[in-house]
Length: 311
Image 1 (cartoon, helix red, strand yellow):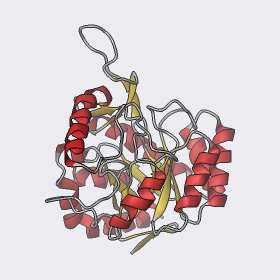
Image 2 (tube, rainbow, N blue to C red):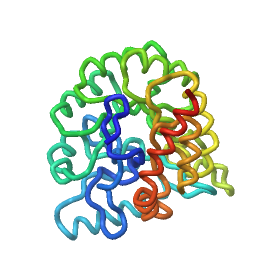
Image 3 (tube, rainbow, N blue to C red):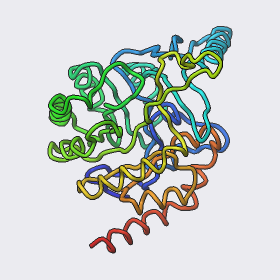
Image 4 (tube, rainbow, N blue to C red):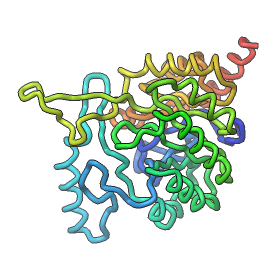
């Protein structure tokens, strides 16, 4: 067991928010129980259709499920598209809502180590979700303040960001992680989080991008802008992790374009204390499970070795 500033995990290899939905048991070659933690899709106080325009709650009846699935397939190109070296998405916090998660999903994921990601449109929404999650057996809560496809910017106002961090820290019984983007002065936000007592930062969230129809010049995504993920953002994520490591002492969870063990190593060398797999699950869904099985002990040894060198 590894203790990352109060976040107790069995290894340093995680799954990023949304890559495996809410941590439910997967079939065949994906084992959600093997990771240090599965981070859930970002939850909001109420369920949201987001930019999808389709209910996030799977219906009970088989015929209704088929129709629901057809809707998902038809709407997917408006919120998720493959691009060279990754994906661009504009889900807009499409999720089942915190209460549905607590009542319907959480009881089915007892064996999975979970970090619950939350997003809100007011400070009170964050606090209410934290209060509802306080009694659950989860590893930590991730505060998502950096989704590029929702119309609220918690990172723009440093004072508001600090107020949110402070009140979340005062309300939560769980360790807290804040997920930051590369927007603006992210180093200042990392310092604020550390000073307030947030347990760790997660760097980075997807990077805001624009995908245009080459024939018409119009945006291909419903929300116009979306979040870019995948291999093409790795070098940026590495740079941000390296900069943060020079500025803060709390753990850094690094992610962005991790597709193999060598990518993990680079993030550890850059200063990450743990790493997270995201879009690789879309391309090679079995690979993160395979990497963890082969390399979880190596990850622990590598981090300890790097810490000794830095001393």
